[in-house]
Amino acid sequence: MEFLRPSFFIIGERKCGTSSLYRYLVAHPNVLPCQLKEPNFFGKGAAYVHQNIDSYWQLFPQKEAIEAIKFDWPELNEQGILYHEAVTIARKSDVQYITGEASVNTFYDVNPQLVQQYLPTTKLIVLFRNPVERAFSHHRMFQRFQAEGRDLGFKVNDFATDVLAEMELIQKGGKGHYLSPSIYLPTLKRWMATFGKDQIRVYFAEDLANLEMADKVMGDIQEYLALPFFDYEEILKQRFNVAPKASMDTEIKTKLQLFFKSYNQELAEFLNCSLPKEWEYLGNRAVGTKDG
Image (cartoon, rainbow, N blue to C red; front, side):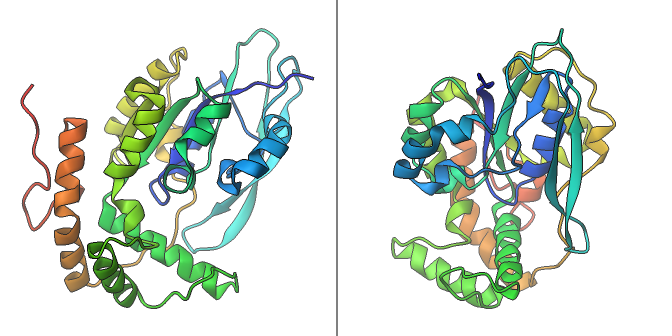
């Protein structure tokens, strides 16, 4: 029995709208989803991957099957309640399909060479979000996990306590749980060094929240994945895996904006672009744009 191999892989980053992007992609009539919303297969380590790679391939659709694909996907609503949504994807015998997955821990937590060993031609997709807001959302996620009784291996305090301690730790050369994943460039360079710049695309969560920009993003991804044109207008009006709204202390937000300012500038220079306006620091653009 042969299975489709993933043609694309949304590798991260966490709390950047990856659930929505994946749902947009699998709305395309030529794209079939993975059975698990987020397998996080490569995050289980090289030994596990080597021993269980056949099980990973079986998460993807069979090449010759035409039966509809049915399974449940976990989602989080705006009230913070986890629920399971039944998903049914029809298949046709005369359609050429591709498939892919989205495991967002992969970008920061996984060695790129491990993924490259098994998926050498897969096209990678990365989403970045305003690093301050991403860190805040990440911390709130761990607060929910701790409240649910999960064993995280560390204690989650209030946001200010945790991020102020992490700022000091990072400035001494260490790494933290919330701020370090928002320092995108060093990790991005490792992935590009392994896969090459042509095999990885970077997009911004803020653009997905704007219908006009989101349409451009999806058009670019269609071209990247060599997919025929599809109108995403209706699906782009939806957001998936959202969390209850919350506000950040202004003083802490300002400190974090200053903390990330130089990191953002370096990222913009590397990508040769201006970052979304939501990344601004104290009324000034957080980035510069290279000539040309």
